[in-house]
Amino acid sequence: MSKATVIPFGPQHPVLPEPLHLDLVVQDETVVDVLPQIGFVHRGLEKLVETRDYNQFIYIAERICGICAMGHSLGYAETVESLMGVEVPKRAEYLRVIWHELSRIHSHLLWLGLAADGPEPPVYQSERSAVYAQYFEELARRGLVYPCFCSRSQLHAASAPHRSDGQVVYAGTCRSLTPAEIAERAKTRAPAWRVRVPDEVIAFEDGHMGPCAENLARDCGDFYLRRADGVFAYQLAVVVDDALMGVNEVVRGSDLLSSTARQLWLYRELGLHAPQFYHLPLLLASDGRRLSKRDGDQSLEHLRARYSPEEIIGRLAFACGLQDTPAPATPQDLARTFDWARVPKSDIFLPEGLF
Image (cartoon, rainbow, N blue to C red; front, side, top):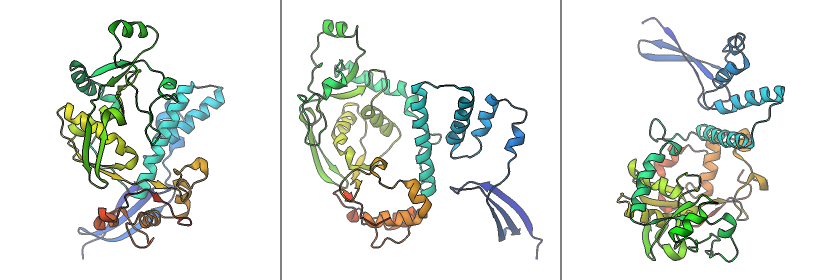
């Protein structure tokens, strides 16, 4: 028998409360034993910062954890600010909350065992303005784009057209402004940019919801392509990104079903290949409300303290009709037996007592 070799493996941080270190006992190419060490792994961070000032430590704080760097660096920065009596601008506070929430969502997804299979490295829409501008200019050259100076209060006024679901249909207030009127209004307000839609019914077959149709002029009106601050709107960005990345199937919540017709129209006008769309029902509270921590609904943080990822996924799968009992399950288990026929088409009410 060959001599056993101990190979250190880790520390790893596979969505565990603390890093996991393994000593693998190997004979030839076979692992014959595993010695786990779960818990705090001393990394000597305190020693690393003894010779650094408070500015330099921020880079070390970010490396305390590989999946929640934002939380550690934010905690450190706020501590320094508190000690020095520093007040950060409101804009910075908002940006910090946004980044921290994105980090929290990322942590939850990893804990549940849901890994993204997107492009590497990740693509950020904020870095693709030049790409979107090419397609925006294509529509502008054809006379389909015009500036809109309407304020939010004007758009949401009681007299504005509304759909049955409460969404505002743009009334076309700025659609026919003359060049002189545009120049005059631009002196006091930067415009957003809308696209002219035709009085046309866009019909499509949703992969789950079935036949759908929407009259662009009546049901949505001219919609935004670019905001007043220069940022390209969701409708244009998502169409361009999905087409250029070769996305051929889009699965999303039914709250975006109303966006599909205008996106299909954009695909057609820009000469891009459209994907097949599938829309899922929304998961609501037992009384039909949107789930919200503000209303006392349980957050994933609370569920993580009481249940394993498999227990949460299994119970949600049961509520959605994907399995007959609330038995624990993994995403891989559900993928093997997934059948669209079992997915409801109407919104799902979370059963009381499920958690």
